[in-house]
Length: 342
Image 1 (cartoon, rainbow, N blue to C red):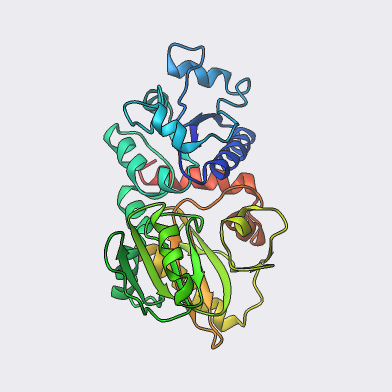
Image 2: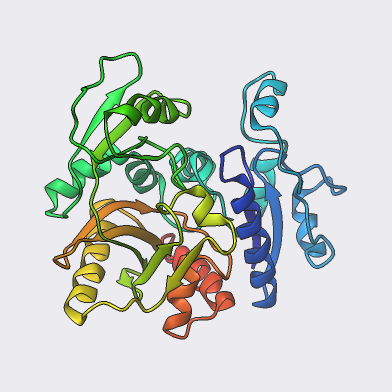
């Protein structure tokens, strides 16, 4: 099968996306597919006039992405038309049998790229436009959690320029409404750090969520083909599971399957499946939870494009039930095609 692995983009998680895309493309080649990496922002400017020709050289083209982590603000400013989609991206995607989306953050997880591909009739992996948009907007997701009986921390939306409530109950968590990887997220113990935390969130967008802080054990549950995988517990060596602890080696200990009583594990897995359905996710996703002292799970959010390096959380959960990294990538391909009757 001819597959474009779409990665990179201009989100804060660009480097994570490049890693996921590079490794997923290699895995798909090992499974017999002709997979080509394409950076969403830089596009494809290769030697072949007809985009379909690149697939005949899939084993030769090991890397069509720009490895350097750019200054995102400078790149945005340099492109006069404001586009985040590079040259020939649509053309090479249309030439493929399937687009494997390895993007993270606002480029990929908010539904805009899915909508673009939908308009051109391009098949792609994972969740569609609606579910991507619902999952990325934490305010909307909380409303859907409440409607579906899914336990989640209390939260309010705060808009930049408004008079933010002074007493929201401390400790609390402040984060941008529609960002991933804990970018711009702060845990605030008292009023002294509250304004700084809001400003940190507003640096990324004009709407923030201020939510109840739940003390407990952090864990994640991935769902694949509608069924929950084993629970993985996340134990940062310092602080909470922020961007640094997510992606810097040696900052976090992870245990899979997590050491919870069977009844707690069951609650987490059923809750993850409920979130998957409530947010209209498809094929695969990963849900973030806190388990409080009484063993009750609280869902923080759902992630439609979890990291896909072999050491990322979802591949670890898959490995715990005997699904190798290469097999996981191939399952994502085959299950995604079923959306289109394939």
